[in-house]
Amino acid sequence: MLSTKLRLFPDHRGGAASSAGGEARGGRGLGKKGVTELERKQLVETDRHIAQCEAYIAKQRDLIERAMQQGRSTEVAEETLEAIEASLRAFERQRRLLLDRLKERER
Image 1 (tube, helix red, strand yellow):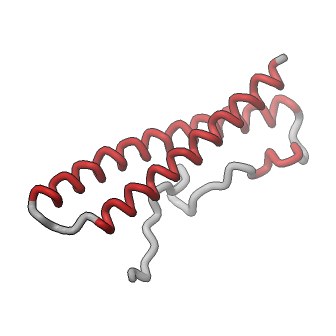
Image 2: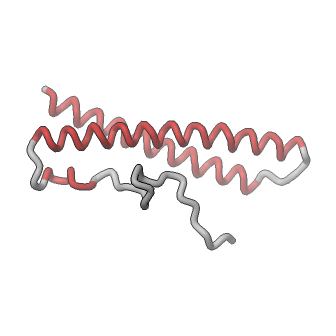
Image 3: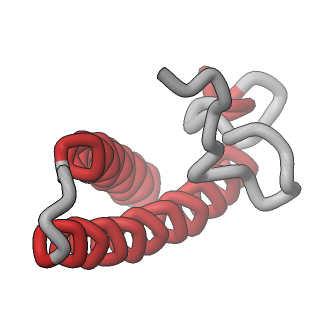
């Protein structure tokens, strides 16, 4: 088992992956406009993560196909694909939640 961690989705500053909640939780210290702007930024970031996941999924499927053609085991590659697909579903859920919140605030 590998002991090193792979950071698939670092934040835009090059640091650790950013949380979806951040300062927007409860809107502490931010006005309505500030919260909305923060959520819009989170939406852009989430869209970027979705695009990255889709690219990783395509690469992983190619890797699995090549491994199968070469008669190599695909077990780990398939497990990795499943994990990336789960991440994609989570980002897509996050995107829907952000869009719903933004629509609510714009009414």
